Image 1 (cartoon, each protein chain N blue to C red):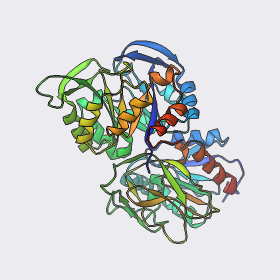
Image 2 (image 1 turned 120 degrees about the vertical axis):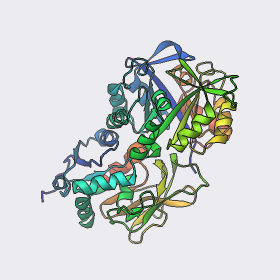
Image 3 (image 1 turned 90 degrees about the vertical axis):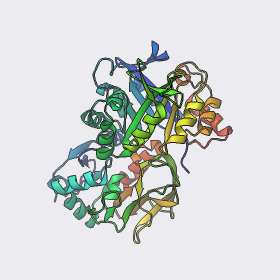
Image 4 (image 1 turned 30 degrees about the horizontal axis):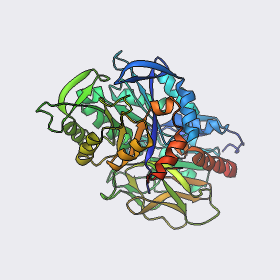
Length: 205
Length: 255
C-alpha cells in the first residue's frame, strides 16, 4: 500500500461509460489533476478515488464485476479510504436496484434503489433542494443538480444522510468517515457542488 | 421542489456561436467557451450546445468545442448535432457532455434513442424535436416533424413521434418551434400544450423567446425548462436578471 500523498492525482474509475471528462474538469478547476483507472490494483490505494456515474445499473454493475474493480471498491469502502461515489456510483454501492432485478450491487451500503413514483415527471432532471439531517457534515443545504430515475428512499443507519423531496423524500447524499456518496452530481452543481468537492478533498485527501 | 431550468443555447458552426432566424442567415455571436462560462456565472442552470452544421456535413458535433466548454463550466452540458450512432453519443460524453440530443438520425432510426437510453440511462437520451405548423391531415396535432436542421419536412405528426420516442426511452424532449425560431414572438404555446398532453417526460421549450414573460408562459403551458439564445447573446437580459424577473412572475427558479 502506497502512502497517501497530498496532491496526488484523483483516480476516476472507468465504469464502461461515464462523464469522466466532466468530473475531471471539476477537480481540475480545484487544482487537482485526475487519472482514469480501470484495474483493481489502481483502485486499492490510499489516493482518493471517484466512482462516477452515468448509465444503467446493469451496465455499471457488470463492468465493475468484469474488471474486478467492484471488489476493489468494496474493500476501499470497508477500509474507509477516501472515496466519492456520484449518482449511479451511489446506487452501485447499494445491494441492488429495481432497475436491474437480480443484478447485485457492491453491498457497501444497505438498501435497494427504486424508481420514483408516477406522481412526478421521471427522470428527475434539474436542480433540487438538498437538506442535511444535521450540522457538521460535508454536505450543506443548497441546490444540487440531479439526473436520475431511481433513488434510495430509506437512509441506512450509521450513515449521515441528506435528503431531497421529489415524489416524497429520498436520499440525496450519504457520508460516513471518508466515504461520500451523492445521488446528485457535485461536478455539475455549480459553486455549491465545487464547494462540496473542495471540502471532501480538504478533509480527507 | 425541482426548479424550472433556464438554459442558454449555443448554436455552433465552425467553432463559433452563431444565431439565425428560422435556422437561416447565421450571424457570429462569439466564442462558445467564453459565452458558456459567462452564462454559468450569471446563473444558467444548464448549457445546450448544438452544432448546427454537423448534420448537413454528415459529421459529429465538434469535440474540441465540447472539451473547451466543459473545461470552463461546472453545470450540465447537453450536446447535439450529427449524432448518428451510440458510438457518437459515447464520444460526446467522453469529451465532456453529460447528455446527448439526437434529432435527424433518431427520426430515421428510433433504435438510436433506445440504444442510448439502455446503455447510458434515459436521463442521457434527449430527443431534439423540431416541429412546424402544418395543415396536412396526416398530422392531427397540427404540427409535423422537421429534420435536417430545419430543411426536411417529414409529414409525420409531432405528437405521434414524441410518444414513440418516449416509449423507446427518451428522457427529455427538446421541443423547438421552427416557425418561432429567432422571431422573438414567444414560444409556440399550443405546440407545448399538445406535446405536454401526450408525454410524461420533461420538456424543454425552444424557439422564439425574447422576454421573461414568454418563459413564464411556457412554464405555465407545461415546460420544465426554457431555452433561449438571442435574448442572452444580444445582452438584452443577463441570465440572472431574467431569472429574478421569472421569480417575480411566480416561477420557481434557482437564484
